Image (cartoon, rainbow, N blue to C red):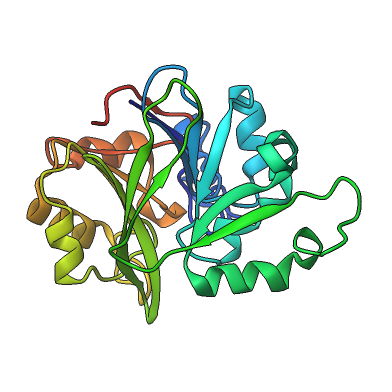
Length: 265
């Protein structure tokens, strides 16, 4: 049961282009944040499940040696969460039938068909990645086949409000991943009870119309009481990791790119 944070930054990444703030100038590698994404492994040697596939995906995977990935869970279709799907081609080409599974909402599937139509052509150009779009709404369960010798993985989708846009969060056993939330419906808060590990977004200290700030994320953590919580999808406005992380409540920590959590269930 392992979690690898591939990226923990917001849509601009950190450092942010044309910014000279102390965070963007920091030499601390924990302050250098690629766009938010993660890998989840349910048991030793099992292929990973990818959560979101942003424009930094290629760089993120090369950093960790390109492990086996069975499928991807997509929270929504904003560019910082799906801009790297074309770079999944080595995984698509190694899949049975050469169609890599993407689990997502119906609106995300439609966006992807429009954004990368060559991946869904009836007569695809040789070498392009091809995907199976597996559509799910909120509060549905589905099972991922990880291959021979591994226990199938059950995933439950959760509804998350990203401003006015409904998107997905995911619960896998006693692990849950929420990003880009500005508001969590009561049913989602109920579904987040009894967690071992919660990953949740916290953009900055001040209010934002479509993302939780730090205090709002901590309020959700208090309501759901996971054993441990990690904050992700952070902007340069959050401050330097070394300083702000020390101010967080017990059991709550900032994630950072490359962080490996070996026990999440």
